[in-house]
Length: 86
Image (cartoon, rainbow, N blue to C red; front, top):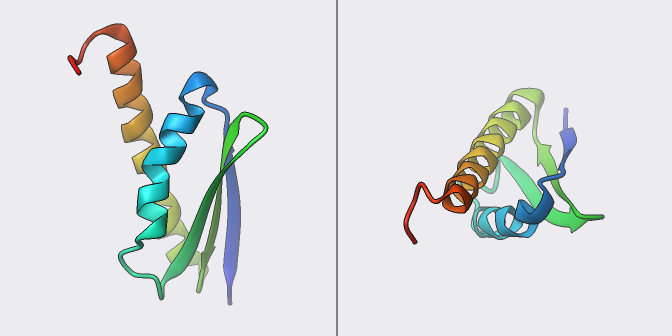
């Protein structure tokens, strides 16, 4: 059974930066047979469209992308606060 999901995240000024970070991963998937991901900016928010062969695969892909969003967004926030030096 095919499983699909859409996740929208409104990240303010960080939306396009996080989008660029995710585009690299989405364009070169490690296991393309397991699922498909499309990331787009819609109305100032980041939308992630996920498709997988089953619910377990969808969960795995979703977890991976949520982790990537968290890593990118956290890094941007630390840069803004001056915790990291570019």
